[in-house]
Length: 307
Image (cartoon, rainbow, N blue to C red; front, top):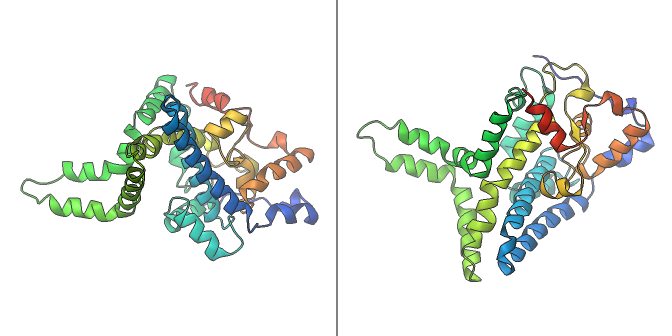
């Protein structure tokens, strides 16, 4: 198997420059998790008080749902907190769960980035696509079709393949067991919103953002990070793309420094909040021309749909 090329921090940073970049913080990661939930809560309150802001709230909440996934990703790298137990507990219980299987999967992605064995290669390999194909993908995301397939596709396939006379109950029971955590969380959310008289918010202000905007921005992030990056790329500075993000893009598409993806692949254990500092240092040392970079998310989409 072809292991992806690695970057030695000593090739770019002095010991004094590298130490603060690599340092874990006992409060910054926790503060970002708290910030993420606070933004979600405020967006929910905004839409409840002013229902006409619902579309904006859906975008804000969907982006912060992605934010939770990004922070869980930092937890998979052990970067949320210097205490591994605290790191893993926060990533598992406050950032969406599924840490252990995600960590195993994601570290394989880093080990074989853009090589044939990269488990994420399937996400970037189809690009570029036609504009019509990209539009269809966006429509599926925004109409909930992508979410439904991810959440209930396995159940639908099992029901479709069910033989005549086969009992339905075991299939449904198995599916409930498989999704019990998701069902419990959403059941508790529905109960909590019902207690304050806004039961509908559980659907309109949590499930709807998850089923629509979250799916779209997750796709945009995946495209920006690795689409049009050469397979079997030998240069470790070109395994992933950093995309310049303005304020609106950071708020609605790329929260918590996820756009610094080239820097992340170069130094995968650097906490996300230190990636902008790493990027500035790399620029000062003349590394930008060698790195895979894009001027914005629209530019990436234009390139990825030029076929």
